[in-house]
Structure formats: C-alpha cells, structure tokens
Amino acid sequence: MALAAPWLVEAGIHPKVIQELIGHKTIATTLDTYSHALPVPHGQAIRVFRG
Image (tube, rainbow, N blue to C red; front, side):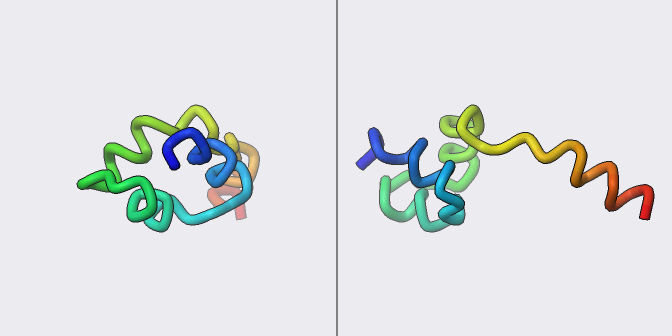
C-alpha cells in the first residue's frame, strides 16, 4: 500500500485516510514521508491573507 501513497496524495485523498491505510502510527509520519507529493498551494494561501 505504501507504494500507492503518493498517488493517493495527488488524488486528493485526505492524509489521515492514507495514514490509516498504510498503518503509520502518527499523521506526522505520513506527512513527513509523503509531503513531496502534496500540491504547493502558496498562491492560494497568499490570497487568503490578502483577502
């Protein structure tokens, strides 16, 4: 299942679901391991702050 994790992240599956499927003890482990596959929505974050 771990080999599918990056595709699950890219497909928008919530990291908590991925954590449970893979069997990581903490969400931090999942996020630390697969954060490279997460989109980088910096522009969206900036728009939130600018209103």
